[in-house]
Length: 251
Image 1: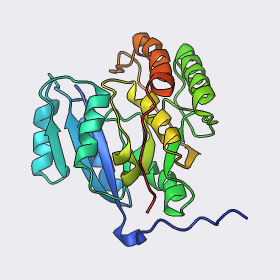
Image 2: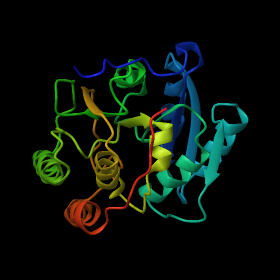
Image 3: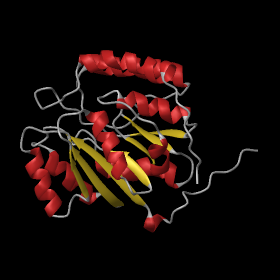
Image 4: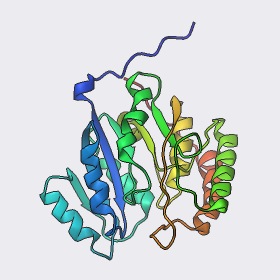
């Protein structure tokens, strides 16, 4: 019989969740996105990586840091991309579990306890928050949803996973697992790469439904059709042409 899962090997009251928030020109939402984190009933370590913003994002972050709302703030020397910002954030992580949080208010941080539950109970090493299961969501672009589903299908064919939302921002994982992954992505290919590396590491992956309040391009959405086309290359790149040996032993 398969071994029964055991609870995460850290007492609930001592569990620290590291939040990596990449930010590029998010002056309209960054302060609210960080203040929402104060409403999460968990012990959070907030790590923000300013990815070379050219608006007032950097100044807002410096002020919030002085107010104690940010534990570690990193200013990239220029706009290096979301993947580069996440990789830089991983270097700063000291918590037991890590989650990626966009700064644009599309995802609700108050749903962290839902994401955490499969890890806390010892069932999962990584959890994806799916926008396409049963959570409430804002109705927006039809072709974006088609593209997301197509990319998820293609990714699943290579990873042999049955995810419904590979491109979701909400990826939560044990920090020791995340730090063991040899990540290379600079831009939005990080979503594809994380998925491929989790599968290659033999991580136990769960999905949970989340709510989603997507932005329009007029509201500041940055990902474009070019990133969608690039994702097809990234799926081949990280699943066929680049399959490094990943050494990770669950503690």
